[in-house]
Structure formats: C-alpha cells, structure tokens
Amino acid sequence: MTLDDLRVFVAACESGNLSAVARDLSRTQSAVSQHVKRLEAELGLPLLERQPRGVSPTQAGRILHQAASQGIGHLELAVRRLHDMKQGDGGTVRITTGATTVRHFMSEGVVRFRREHPAAKLEFRTENSGRGCFDALAAGESDLAWITIGPPVRGIEQRPVTELPWVLAVHADDPLARRTHVEPADLAAVRHIQLPANSMSRHRLDEQLARHGVRLTSTTSVADWDTAILLAELGLGHAVVPALPGWTGGGRAALRLVPVPALSPLAAGWAVRQWDALGPLTREFAATVADSLADRPRP
Image: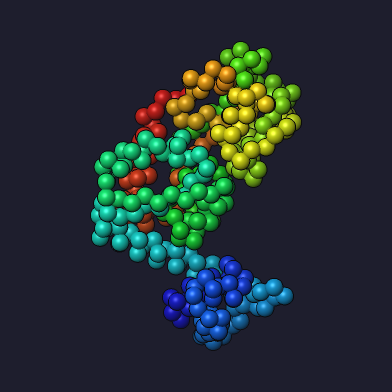
C-alpha cells in the first residue's frame, strides 16, 4: 500500500468516476484501476463497486476512504507547514472567502500583513457557500476559510473572530427608517429582500425569527449581503442583514440601518482543517485579520 494508491482511491471515492479521476490525474484509466486493485488485494476486501453511472465505495471502502482522506489531508498540511518554515516570509497563504469578505472583513488586515511580509504570496479563492469553503479546505486547496460560524463539521475546526449585530436596511423615506430600533414583529409586514439561498446567515436569521413567530414574505432574493443592502437603498424592499464591521452606511443619504437588538448577533470567523498544523505565516495572517477587526469601531 502506497500513498499514491491511497490518493487515487480517495479521488475515485469522491469523484465516483474512474475516467474522470484518470483525466484529472493525467493517467490512464487502467493505471487508476490498478491502484485500487492493489489496495483490494492487500486488504482482501472489495473497496469499490460498479454502478450504472460510475463507482461507489463498499462498506470497507467507506471505512478506508474516511481514514485515508483525513490522513492525506494531515500529511499535506504538514508538508505545507514545513515548506512555509523553509520559505520564511516568502511563503504562500491560501484563503477561501465569500463574495464580499475581503472588502468588508480583510482589507485592513491584508494591508497590515503585506506591510510586514512584502515577500509573502496571498492566494484568494471565492466560494458562494460555507459548504464550498469546507470542501476547499478538505481538498487541501486552501489553508484558511472565512465563514459564518455554524454547526460542527467533521474534520473542520471553526474559530469565531467577530460578532455581527442584525440591522434592517431601508430607504431613508421608509417609515421604519425613523425608528431607533425595530422588533422582530415589525418585520412581518415588510417587503423582504431574501439573503442568499442555502447560506448560514439566512438559516440563522430564519431560525431566530421563527422563535419570535415571524415568517418573512420575500419579494426578491440576492446572491450576497451587498446586493441586499443596495436594493434596500434603492427602495426596492427591506433587508435584514448583519452589520458589517466598521460600516454604518455613512455617506449614503438614501440608506438607513436600523438595529434589530432582539436577534442574537451572527458570528463569523476562521475555519481550518487543523490549527496546530498551520504554518507560522498562515497563523500570522489569521491573527492579523482578527486584530484589525478588533480595532474597528462597533456598528
């Protein structure tokens, strides 16, 4: 059993298609099959079974896949950490984020980090959901992911960094714009701009409003928080959104952000596969972003 055998086997389990694995790894399908057969011969159990549209792991295959994927992931993290130690300030930090994360949460931290480590390389990858961020971490394609903190995810560590109070974004001419705050019950009759589908922020909001007996009537759905705020500013509806760090809407005369204090704040922060395995440069980037957020005024 070799590390290469396990890499190919894990890829086959996750793809479900040996031809696709062969293409992705620049190998022949016969070579991919040989890796799997070698594992099966050594273990004395079938690991993959053919399906009408590919392959799927057997019970034995699922056990090996779970252990192998975690083991390979830990090895890759260790290799990256050693590489970063060797490179020093010339290493690479790979970050997966949402569509608006860098602007709202990381801009000051990136400037500070770049000032201290001008030779370091930052690689940003954008995903549309927390699940996409977790998948990038699990596949070893990112070192850090900025997420809305949610339920535990197997093989992923989540670390809260900041809390975001909920606000109602409305046009300045809206009657609710004159309030010092709004209650959940006030939201029942608004024209709601829905937060991104399947996002943790939307799940958390719906969950909290349900406890107050409120169900929002949606007129529009958007792909990110910025778009929801913009549509509210244009008078096209109301958006219940997290208050972004250090931003009060100042300079935008048509927009008002009214607090909704009855709703518990939304937590956001870092996700990684294993904090202890992060290289020093990656750890410093994560800490720099956290420190820059702590220094910003509360909404």
